[in-house]
Amino acid sequence: MIRVGLGFDSHRLVPGRKLLLGGVDVPSPFGEKAHSDGDVLLHALCDAIYGACGRGDIGEHFPDSDPRWKDKPSSHFLLEAGRLAKREGWRLVNVDATILLETPKLSPWKKAIAESIRGILAPLWDLEASAVSIKAKTMERCDAVGRSEAIVAHVAVLLESGGS
Image 1 (cartoon, rainbow, N blue to C red):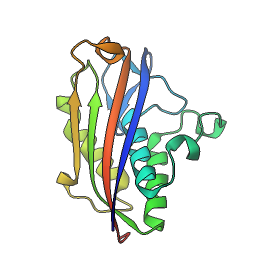
Image 2: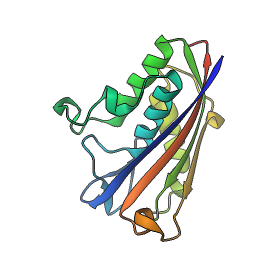
Image 3: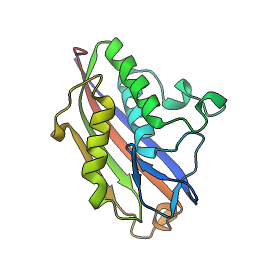
């Protein structure tokens, strides 16, 4: 059996915060405003995994109303989502992600972001390099993303039965 999960997340961008994407600190004058560390890509990836498992979204598992998750690394949330999927007998086949951000340009960081995600998930699944795809797009100066006020991530995952 196979299942597809779709994840989405967005955050406002503010000065004085780190811009974290897939666990990588991308040099930028602004970063994500959030209760946790704000890694929009890992949040969307969690939602994709939870969705494929039929287990809701990241907010149900780690509500921003709970002080335990304040400034928590998003890698923690991703590992927990992955552990749930693996316990339920699922194996992650691939991750396909698109990040929408006007600036900075992410081309120099895409490979490091993909490697970071593979590294975070390594205790659960051995993913080959081609199993994690990171794409980056701008919004051509349209909407909040185009004005550099926000960042958005879309993620799709494929899970198959056989949790090893």
